[in-house]
Image 1: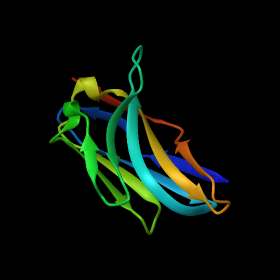
Image 2: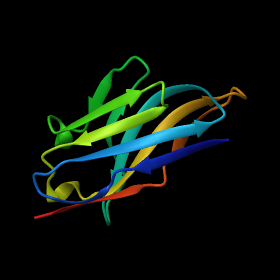
Image 3: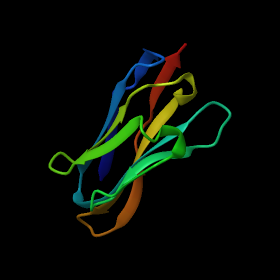
Length: 120
């Protein structure tokens, strides 16, 4: 019914930038909150940033001032602009989107994950 496709991960040197994208498609009636999570090896998945339907944004303290979350409602897409990347940002990044389908059920959907590796 609903698919999320992520793109934009890769290998970058410390201090560099990457932009992640997550596009939702399928039987979408409306999109509510959109968020990015990350999971580093041996660690729990953590919330990186979120944006609601009113464009209110929240960030983890560790990324404030460096990462920016945004959304394009016409494209059903959420972005994560990551600047001044640090080795500790290395993780698999997942998008999470709360979607109400055309069948009027509301669920959280996850992207497939994209690897971000920051080298020293």
